[in-house]
Each structure stands twice: as C-alpha cells, then as structure tokens.
Length: 511
Image (cartoon, rainbow, N blue to C red):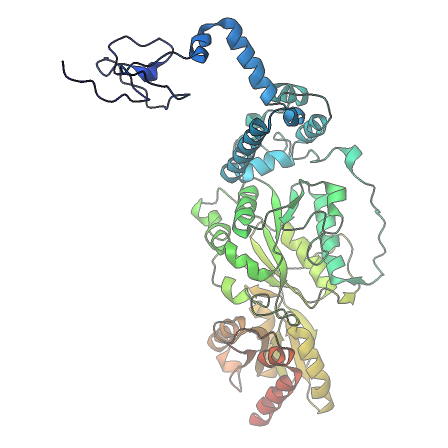
C-alpha cells in the first residue's frame, strides 16, 4: 500500500472514526466538511500517523469535570481576586479585558458614552465591585441591575427621558459640596469666566459634558475645568488619552445620540490631528443624514501666537476651518463675551469651533450672570468713530486699541469693530460702519495668504464696493512659521505702530 501522508495537527489520516467531541479531526474521506477552527490544544502524532487521546480530552465527557471547569472560569472573571491567580493567567485576563474595552469604546463610540453618562446604576455597581469581597461578572450585573444592551438602544427610537439621560452620572454621596452663591460684581479672569460658563451649563443641562486631555483631576491646561470633576464626576468631566482624532470622533458620536459634548484641545494646533472628524463629520453629518442627526458640539481651546511657544504651538486654525461647510467659528476677546458666548455655543445645535487666545486667559473683567448669553453671529462695536473702520478679532483687539490712543492724539477718530463671528461674518454691522466711514482696515493675527482677512476683504469689495473711497487694507501675520526668538516672533505679527501707519496712509490718500 502507498505510504501515508505526513500527519496534520488539524486533520487525522487514520481510518478510525474520530470521537464525537472533536469534529476538527475528521477523516479526509468523511462526508462532513472539516472544521476550520484551530485545535484547542496541540496533538502529538504517533509514529504510525495516529494521534493519542490526551487525559484532558477524555475528561471532557465527565459531568463533574465540566462543572469544575465552569467554576474555574467564573473564578477567572473575579475582578478583585485576579491577583490571587497565577501571573500568567492574571496578565492574560487583564490583556483580554483591556482589549475588549478598547474595541467596545471604538466601535460603540457615542452610544456607549451616552449610556454611561446616564447610568447611575453603573456607577453604583463600580463602587460595589471595588469592595474587597469577591464578585463575578454575572453577580455584578445582577446586583446593579445594569443591562448594557438596554442602555445602548438607538436614540432614534427612544426619548431622552426614557433612556435615563436625566439621571446623574455620579451618586449624590460622592459629590463634593460646591459654593452656589456668586458675586457677579467681582472681576474674573477669562479662564474663570469660561469655567463658570461650563459649570453653569453642565448644571443646567445633564446632557452637557466635557472631554479632553487633562480636563479632569488636573483641571485643564489653562485651568478652565478646575475641580469640575468633584461636582460632576469623572464621566461627565472625562479625561482622554493623547489621541485627538479618537476622542473628537467619540464626541461627534455622542452629539449625534443626544449629548452636548465640549471638546477641549490642549492646544488648538493639536486639533489638526482631528481635522477629518471636524470637517467630514461635524460639519456634514446633519446634511448627509437628511436632517436626521444634529451635532451640537463645541470644540474649544487655546490658540494663537503666545510668548515663545514655537511654531507648532502658535498655530492660528481659523483659516484652516473657515472653508468647512456647516461649522461656525467664534473668537472671544473679553471675559464677559467669553462666558456669554460659550454658554450660547453649548446651547446651539450647530458644531462650533471656539477660539480662545492663549495670552488672554489672565485678562480680568466683570462677567454676566447665569442667564446672560450673547449672539454667536453678531459683531461688537468696541468704539464708535467717523473716520475709518478697523475690523479685528481676538488678541488683535487690544493691539488696535493701543494704536487708537496714538491715532486719537493725532486727530483721527477710528471706529473699531470686534468681529467675534468669523463664520458667518456679521455683514450688517460691517455695512453700517463702512457706509459711515467709507474706509476699512482689517487687522488680524491670522496668516496673510488665505486668512480670515482675505475672505472678509473679498466680501467687502464684492458687496460694498460703491461705498468705499479706498481699497481695503489688510494687516496680517507674515507667511512664515512663528519663530521661538522673542524679537523674531514679534516681527511676524502685527504691532500697534503698523496700525497707526496704515490708518495715516489711507486718511492721507483720501483727504
């Protein structure tokens, strides 16, 4: 007879019929197709090509052995008692739990986040599981009454109230008491005004939450979320890994399913890593879903040219985002409008990129109360005048106002407008001002090429050309990376002397 082929660990070459418990070792002549799953343990072939049955395999048919195996499996799922097992089993189980958790977070996204946000039962269960007593996964779910499949039902089929979003994310006994009385007459730093806005809106609406790197226990890179985790818990003030595209995408999913997330970028330049989520998801999902989804999300953080922060930390992203359909751009400049505008942005159903200049956080001024909000689409007339209109926003507002002192000393009366809304522009306010002065200068920290000033200049020339006595002048940052050296950094951005010179040039040309 011809020699037998070499044995395979997945298929037996013996004419002896296989045992009924291992369909993966069928004969190649069997009418049933062999199993494609790998063998649960290696099989050592005999010299004749036949395999031997291991004791573990023979014991599988024993009911007592099955019961002991089930008990061992339950013991391996004990969360507090994992350290009592061997290092190899403990490490394997930990890796498995971490892998499953990561996959669930990525795939479920906003649905998981929404269910966790609204589940006080889950929080209670986590505290129970943290006790030193032993608890299996089954007893954990039975004790808490938490049903993950029930919590992850589609928001399109259930109302927010029936899904439990009104429930607190943290048990009341875990929350620290906070001071409720506020003296609105006391000046506040801008970072404090922003913190108050987040605090008041999270207290007003349980769907509001904030996520980002170090927003929790650390309090944010510029202290905007200081101690909020003590009041609202770690699930509504969510610390995230250093993965902007990951947690921004998760926030988009959360917004689609009913939450109102605030995404804090540790630096606005880092949000370029989430450009796909902001452009292809935030701005377009309402349209591409035929209006079925809204994306009420606020993406905020520090940006602009600081003091010797280097090129990568001195980005001005307003020019990057202005061409994205469906996204609003807002730039704040004072503690008062920062608080009022952030509250309005959180309540808006539109995705909003909220620009905060890194050098304005320590600016101090009075702020409004909990009920004061400000229109996201309206510019602010900072100073009225009759000679020339100066359009600006953000930090450049203070550069312009410093130049205005010199201009008034020279006999000029400029009108200063803080744009605030970078998309869309408040063309009504701009038109009224240009109709009065017939001249316009745009002062910005954005780049000269493709910046906010370029778009605004085009709008003015196309819409109000007949009102102009002089072409619009743009004062913008140089088209070079921002230098680290202090003198070179100052040379790349607009200074008050340049504003004074530009105003004099236009006024003399139209005299």
